[in-house]
Amino acid sequence: FHACEVFITSRSSGGEGRDALKRKLDGKSSCDDIISLIKFDSSAQTIVINQPMSLDITKNFNFKPSGGTNYYNGMLQVEKILETNKLSPFENYIPMVIFLSDGEDGGNESNLTTLIGQLTVEYPTFLLNTIHVGTDSGGENLLQKVAAMGNGIFVKTGASLDEL
Image (cartoon, rainbow, N blue to C red; front, side, top):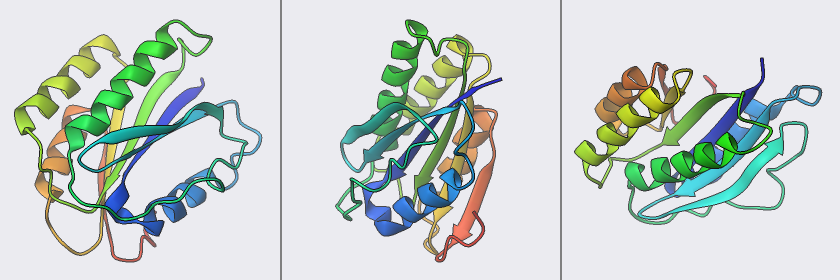
């Protein structure tokens, strides 16, 4: 099988998000999986879409901390990528999301959980894994909840990200 991995990271996680992505990509140079990258704070931006995991997609962008965190806006970008993939050669890829944040969600939890519910119905193989970065517990409960809803796992890394 092939995976469509969407790595989504909060801008406020700074260089830790970039470093986590580099560790995730280590050793992936010969696989056929693809990856997309979304950065978010109060808004969201798709930085990379459907690139081979063999490419070093981490070298030409930076993660500068900025304010606010809205999980829903990041997940809307995930939905757009999955919609695009329905009409592409990637339609049979398994969508796996790695959602990384260090902060409390400032958005509407109901909108977020409704969207995740819709994604799990529309894409039966959809996996949403969440990673809580840092020592602040803000957002941890919601990240646990949405990982369970998305058939994924929740990981709390602590400040160093060594557990990734």
